[in-house]
Each structure stands twice: as C-alpha cells, then as structure tokens.
Length: 157
Length: 157
Length: 157
Length: 157
Image 1 (cartoon, chains in turn purple, cyan, orange, red):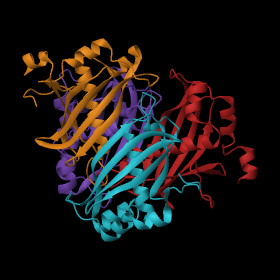
Image 2 (image 1 turned 90 degrees about the vertical axis):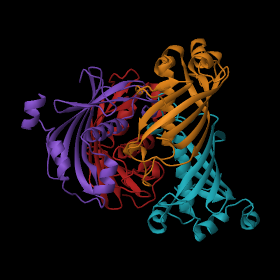
Image 3 (image 1 turned 180 degrees about the vertical axis):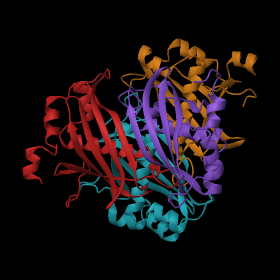
C-alpha cells in the first residue's frame, strides 16, 4: 500500500494497484457479513479504476472501440468475512497478458488481514461477444504493469 | 389471490396479477431483513411476468420494437419487513393508462400480511430515452386490465 | 457543492451533505442505464456517510445501542438516467426530525443535471423492529442540520 | 433434466438437483448480458432450494441450530453469456461431503447450452464464524446425494 492517500481511483505503485471501497448495508446479508457474490463487485470496481488510472474509460471503449472485457474465469477463496462499515483495500496485479486475454490477481484486505483472494481471467470481446485482440494502446499501457516488464523493474521497484 | 397454483409467470384474475417470489440471502442485509431497494426488484419481476402473460417479452420489445419501459416515479411504503426464506406474493393492478405512460399499484404480501406498497409510474421510451407512444397491440392488451374496462367488469368481477 | 475536494465520506456545508459515488457495471442494466432500484443504494451510502461524518457508525449503533434505521417511505422521481462511469453527487438535506423518525431530501446529480429526487422517511427501530426514540446524542447532532436550526442559520449560512 | 415440470424448489433426480430461474433486468448490465457476479446468486438460490427439498430451511437452521453455510471457495468458468428474459436451469451435484465441508458442482444452462460452470466448497459455520460439524440429520440427507451412495446407485441410475 502507498503512504500517500489514495485518490478515488486508487493508486499504482510497484505494479500493484490499490483501491479503497466501503461496505454498506447493500453488500451484507442476513448472516451479518458481506454476501459472497458481492466481493466480485468490489474486484470489478478495482479493475475499472485501474483502467481509468491508465487513461481508459470502459464506457468510452465500449462506444468508440466497440469492445468490453468479459470475465472468462474467476477463482475466489474466502478466508475471512468482511462486515458492515469495513473499509476494504482491493489490490490488483496483472500476472499475464495475452493477445486477447489478461489475468489479474486481486486481494481484498481489511487493514493487514487478507479476506478474499480472487484470480480473474478476462477476455477482450467485441459487441458481438467474439474475442478480439486488445487495442494496441491499451496493451502497451497494461504491459507496463507486468512483473517481468523491464520498465517496471527499473523505475518502479 | 387465486386458488389454483400460480405458474412461474403468475396469474391474472379480476384484473389483478399475482406473482410469487422467494427471499434468498442475496436479498437480505445485516439487519436480518430484506434490503429496502430489493423490493423494487421483486416489483419489477412481477411487472415483467405480467407483460409476459399478456404475450409481451421485454427483450423482444427492446430488440424488435426498439423500446423499453422506464420508471418515472416510484412511491414505496414499507409496513413490515420480509425475511430470509419468506415466500412473497406481489400483486399488480393497472390503475391508469395514458398514451405513453402507465401506473401500476403493487403490493407485496407474506400470507395475509401486507409488507410493502409500491405505486409505480412507467413511461414507454425509445432506445434514445425519448418518450414514445405505447405500441397499439400492447396498449390493447393492457387496457383489458383497467378496472373501468367493460370486459373486465363483465367477465372477471 | 463545495469547492474543496470531498472526502470519501463527503462534506457538510450549509446543512447539506454532498457525497460522490461512481457508476460501475454492477449498477447498470441491459437498457444501458442505472437500474432504478440502485439509486436507492446510492442514497443509502450517502445517508450512512452523513452519519459517519457526524460521528455515528451504523454497525456500532447496531451492536452497542441495539438500533438501526428502517426506511418507512421512499418517493423516487426519475428525471434522467445515469450511465456507466458517471460520477454522481448525492446531496442530502434533513427536512424533519421527530422523536423516532426523520425525513431526508436527497438529490442525485451528474454535474449540474438533476437525475433523481428521493424523499425518504426513516424510523429509528430496535433489533426487534419496534420503533424507539432516537438516542439523545444522535438527535442533538442531527438537529444541527435542520434548516430552521439557529446554529446552522448563524454559523453556516 | 426431468420430464415432469419442476416445482419452485426444483427436483432431484439421479442425485442431481435441477432448478429453474429467470433473468430479469436486475441481473443484466450495460453490456447487455448477465453481470458475472450474479450467476453466483443463481447458484446460491439453487443450493438453498436443494436444502429445502431435503427438508432444511436455512433461516430455521440459523435460528434454531445456530449455524449457516459459508462459501470457502468458488471457481467460476464463464462459457457463454445469459441474456435478459432467458430461463436458466441450474443443476447441482454434491461431489464431496466432509465433517464440516461439502463440495457442489453447479452448472447453469439455457436449454442445451452450458453457460457457466461453478465448483463451490462450503463450510458449516457457527454464528461466530467458527467451523462446526454438519448436524447429523442434515449430513444423513446430504449423503444420499453422493454419487457413491448405494441408494442412489440402485434406484435412480
């Protein structure tokens, strides 16, 4: 995590994006904890803000470039529950970048406690739903985040 | 309510549509009751099934006729809370039918107890969001449900 | 709205609380706009943050004082739709404060455009669901926000 | 799938539970398809109805036996998207049953097309969140559903 306060879109540091989100009544269920599907919403908010920080707006990508990200696979491990009023940090780290897919490792924490681990595979799809290659500028921006990228290695680590 | 078992789309009797829906964990919150916004989902499921019973599929209306219903106004009164596992009946009664708008009175009950009252004003809109007149066949079908309709008055009351 | 950047909990100025929230995919529907029930989530986030700014945490109120707020009535007028990626401002103004109830006028805007108007009546309830009087410190804090309060009139306007 | 019409709670046949659920506007997003987190809601509805068919009500289990199921792990593979108005079948098959955990293989289909595969590991937890052993009657009922159960093998396969 960064020492400086996070903007609403979070911050990228050392190839890891950190994003804060709050638990409201809407997220909880009668067991008094966050409903298991809602962590996937938190994770998607974080991915959206990571793209926004890189200069890419999903609504504009959809309208101008005619494409969107579709989740192909999501592995969620629930270690500890989040509760009403918790402030959560979602960290996102790009772990693979293919021609039309990418893999993101996401962790949801409350302070130092890791609550949920999500490993998400996304595909770049056209409006038709068919897979398409990532647009070159988006791919270039994302590749900066890869752990093996020399740019990241030299400047940010 | 009708004596015969309701189909998944519910049933229309005496101008009133009745529809059953169940409360799951996803609908509840940390206070142990259904979250206040989620009753609006139940109400919309009921309106959708009422249209389906009349022969109108919202997805087809959107793709073929290029229009959708937009909620213009919704008044919700919360009398008693619903809880996990409750089976709820949503009744819907058309109370007004204009050129491009309609008003629906919806009540959510658990057995005999009235839990939530919803009065909803809907507008017929084009894909652009501009108001458009209700397509004639849909309007004809809906007018059968009006309390002042002689057809309803003679046969169903 | 205030000229200074809003904190995550928003800011109170002249008796009006302003809170920023972002539209994500989870909030939208197949019509390409925010689903009508989800504005009620945005409104509740704003009310929660208003309470937090006043020093009251809903989860602590629930666990320590054994009470919660229940929505009794909600009138929503939908003027214009919000869309994916919109940044919305929710303003909340207390308009009435009774022994066990309060009324809040909430407006959801995108820049200068008013999108949704919500008038919400809340009741203070015990864990059992029975109405209870507002705890004195909470009532004192809320009364500062009333438009007729001389404190607000002298200092903040 | 069975030839007889499913009840609201679905039906169990050959150790597999089948449950029908409909896609409404609330489930879709601006991409025109079901939002990826919402399939987890469909899956949980199905698990809840499977328990109900076996005679176990989650709200009663929570209040009387003081326990609930917590999802420990969920692997979701998204093969094809579901859309507004789709009627989906969720099939659930118990694949493992430990002292305090169980594994369920769930598949979401539209007609013959498999859309989403979910493999879910659940733990039995007390109100405190601590793992507890499955109550004996529930365990007995569930063990009937295991593929290796001789009862299932003789009568239903």
